[in-house]
Image 1 (cartoon, rainbow over the protein chains, first blue to last red):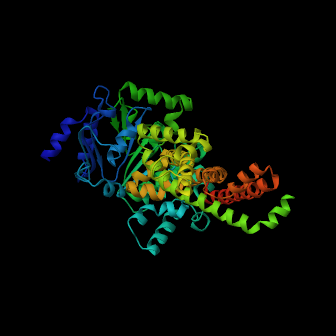
Image 2: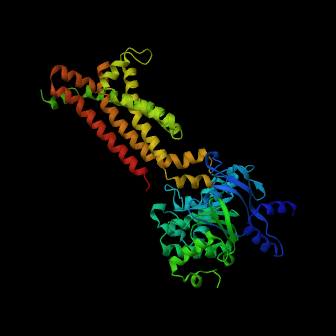
Image 3: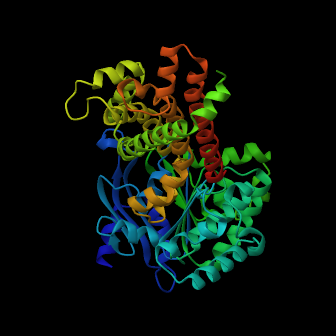
Length: 289
Length: 210
């Protein structure tokens, strides 16, 4: 616990609150991902860091939503986890090891990644896309085929109908489902999702959000989910972290979040109200009643 | 003498010239692809080098072909009279379309696809061979097609420096003021160009996914 004490001091007030809450449970959950005073700026431009000395613990099995406006640094924070970016100072620990010590390829194959529009390979079939990591890991063909079928079923697509299609023969929602299946292919313990439902029409988005929220509960993976949509955050998160200009300004469970007294939280809450005519609190799952 | 009579009378000679012409084109294209494709892959992430390479290749394209053949004759090793010089000139002409399309094809790939590839744990060489090149292939092939059609045409002028091929008939016909003899060179050359264009276009369509 001595190490944890040092980490604790680096955290913002609101993060501490949540850690204390977690500490009350019988066995404290282990941190799968740990940010230790991480700073990141483009081209070493230290005067305007995108991530400014952030410390954050992400626990095993939680769905942590990184919420923030465009340019708040949430995608950057995500990319620091799978070493697509490297911190200028501080450390990012994944499963107890600094990302600078990890072999980047090994690290990434153990972390699923889903982005907006899916990022599917247009020249691969759906089955080949899903089989990407297993193929790179040289699984046997029969095992890969079985896994692809399992995953397509898991994300609600009929393998017989979809396995042989190419991404351009799918709707946006179907592409996104394949993107999720591909990320889950090698059963990674961690899943990173960068506004995965951002490009979908509202109806499809709501469908996928609900399905994914069920899926996430069943899979028990550690999920880090980036969004600028508070409604989505409230629906999916076990914990919401709000970023503003590279700082964590608020952190809490969906129940706690809307009651946090911070102007940026209020701004996000107001955006929710603007869309739903003030009825947000009654209709948003997880919102305090 | 009608063109048809000349064709029939000289069919062995025309066939021989066509084969020689095709050999010139294929050799030049093979060398041009061997240079431009790796160079195009190399300049994708090097903006300074890219401008130089594309600039130099563009300059070659602007030199009138007859002048280029003439310039090359006095140059040691690659110059002189004959096929070798002609091939060098044809390669210089073919470089730009292949180089430019390789660069455009490789740099025009959806950044989301490349990011996903990297994030899923593909190595740089896996990304190049399994993602970038297959996706760029139709564009690269379009460049090869353009270059092939250009080379078939320009190769007729190579006869001026003694490289043989279908240009032999054209130059002879001009000297004799005989349409029949000119057409004996021009028609097979045009047919070759059309054939190459159609076949490569078909291959291109076959490789294009979306």
